[in-house]
Length: 554
Image 1 (tube, helix red, strand yellow):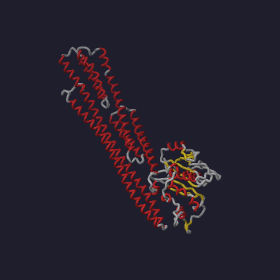
Image 2 (tube, one colour):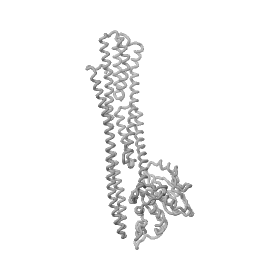
Image 3 (cartoon, one colour):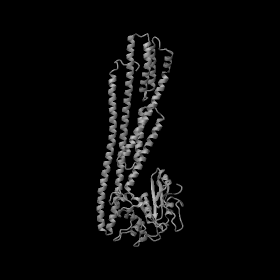
Image 4 (cartoon, one colour):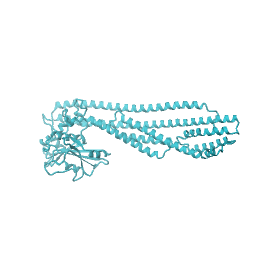
């Protein structure tokens, strides 16, 4: 983007609304994003700070009067300065405490959205961190009245869970002119922050952990309390649908290229299907998010198989046409002889059989890898059997006994070709089954890798939350809040129990997912195997009717 655009605006009725043009920009981003939002009192230089983060002197509107310049939330998407292939999304928010607005609820709404949308939240203030600066953070304490982690229907205190969802917190103190010394010793920025916000008896200070500790209550902000859990579920649905679409596009794009070379041997089509199916699953796995019941994995699996069946059909149609065109070309001379009555004379039947054998030899030499070679030739022989019967009946060189023998031989030829066509179908079915087995094996490996990665991330997330709670407990003990520290100790133990339970549940969900996927594969294989057994049984019955001597044409 060459300049910022408005993401969140205020409608005439005072409600916040999303700008469609900004959404279109976000939808076009295909890279990972880092979202940095700045909040703070109006006229404290937030827009200037965000312009510098964008590496520009201008961009977000700047003002030189007491009137607030930024309204709503403005967005600027730029390349990340240090992370390749990453987009930095900067959010400049409307200044808090604008006397011209006179609406504290509006300020709270803006602050909540900044927290929920960002991965890093910058709180901008001027001067020193004094009581006034701390009071400016009142919106932090109001967050837990405006946001719930779990379902709004669940009347529980889930504030401990906030740390898993909330952004990193940075307090930018502007125009700071004092020496950083505490008790005559040099102090770091963090030392100064700790000193300015240290706990006092009877009052829990405004350190970022206050976000985690405040009491949860209901509020009708935004029409209903925003629920992080529901937002995650909604996001998971959107992301998983997009992941299925992306995976299918990868598969379809590759198969469309392969289709340009149709007809091909079945093993070549199956091999490319396996490769692209693995790529499609990997693409899905990379983007998918909390597909705990495997619904979307099943969806892409089924759709890939549907597409594969379609491409197999298209390959067969291309093979069928090539074989038919070849037979038409090879039998052109025979067709002309039939028109001229060459075979309608004494000895015409033997001549017809000789020409037919020549066609068969040439056809087999040119179609040994065609998937529909046997099926097309079966139809061809049935068509020629009509001419053959007429020629045999009219051939005066043959005795009635010889005609009867040759008639039986013709039946055997047709039956033998029908058997060959069905045998080829069974060979191709077994080849398809093997391809499906290998694809499923690869899919199981990818699912296992995805499971291990998600479990690792879940453990890290739990550890971060636990570290935050332990640090807070240590601070409480250091400052003499024994009772609160003990209460927090109980909460930490409960968090450990919940984390262990969550990890166990996730492992069980993945085990069920793997089991269900394997079950679907086994059912599919069983159905194909049953079909194979039934067709082989029918083949064996037909083969028993063949004469022992076989057939010269085949």
